Length: 162
Image 1 (cartoon, rainbow, N blue to C red):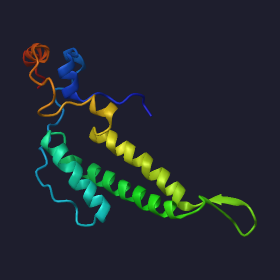
Image 2 (tube, rainbow, N blue to C red; image 1 turned 30 degrees about the horizontal axis):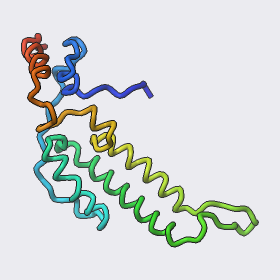
Image 3 (cartoon, rainbow, N blue to C red; image 1 turned 180 degrees about the vertical axis):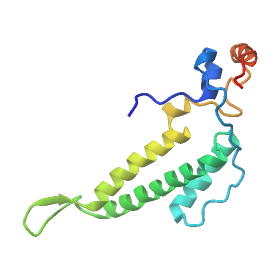
Image 4 (spheres, rainbow, N blue to C red; image 1 turned 90 degrees about the horizontal axis):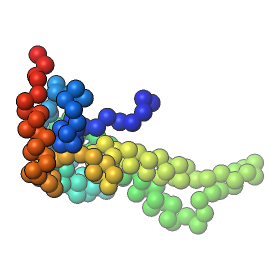
């Protein structure tokens, strides 16, 4: 791991980061307009897709290249809910093996791993409170602020790389 994740370019521009630290050649992908959930998603994953998609695409955060991340988030959420449903019906989260030792149910690990993946994908999509504060989308609060416009005016005059 190389340390802290780099800030998105739009965030750097908004925050007034000096031009030498901004990647002006970062690709600008197309907003995703296909609201149809992938056909293979389960019922709960599809419900989660239908809940999140309008928010993410409406704010300009979801690009065509991000669909697979949203899909993985929804599938992980489905795995979490399925494992939780099974565990809620169990009296104990452990069982005794034939040799007499105690072992946790497989669903405990599945649930924990799914929770970890959900948080990871949610962070990538900007849907956790801390990650949401680090991204800038269309219609963001303060998007027309004088301070932002001041910094962006300086960026428009920045030298372009050829």
